[in-house]
Length: 125
Image 1 (cartoon, one colour):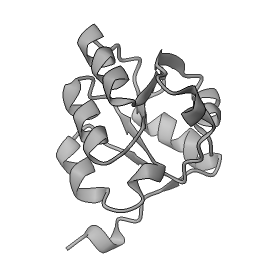
Image 2 (tube, helix red, strand yellow):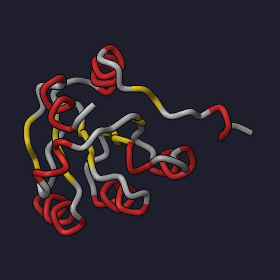
Image 3 (cartoon, one colour):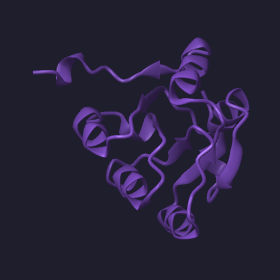
Image 4 (cartoon, rainbow, N blue to C red):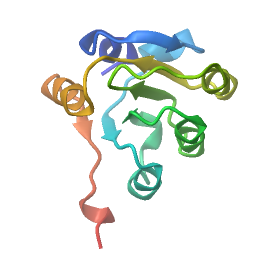
């Protein structure tokens, strides 16, 4: 599923689109969390093909995505980003969109359209 399709499915607004070419990139997985420690612990492979869905609207979300080579973040619940967070997303090359949907609804819509979750079974101990 492309970033452009994700944006359409979620009726998302553009927050920071720093790389128009990446809107055509295919994503095969999504992971949703407001706890960046969970994101770091759970996303270990294929992170370049993963979309991060979160309501955490601060630099920590951007930095976490940067560390994992995630280049698309969907912010849920109508959250607004401070200018410095948008600037950081732009500086790191991370595309950011926002939706009014709750995290649950956003995940449901994307899953129903074929975007899978990450395989967490091997990460549980």
